[in-house]
Image (cartoon, rainbow, N blue to C red; front, side, top):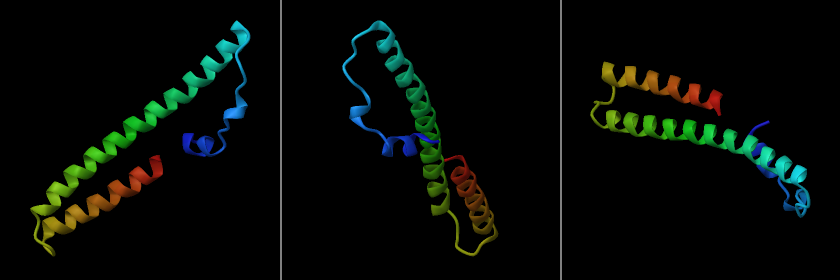
Length: 87
């Protein structure tokens, strides 16, 4: 499951007051496991945003209907499909 799917199931009632070191460690491990996934997703999203900005700038310089335009269009579609499969 993904972080987004887990987030929709999140409930603050899942966690109760920490009363032992073992319980504290359990919560810490849960947090660290989720946080790593969050960081990975955030990194992927940052890369996608950067790539999108670059593609947008490149589009501005192309004449609609030109060969370069078509090549860029095809590459953009491939990139979007690739990123969709990642997320």
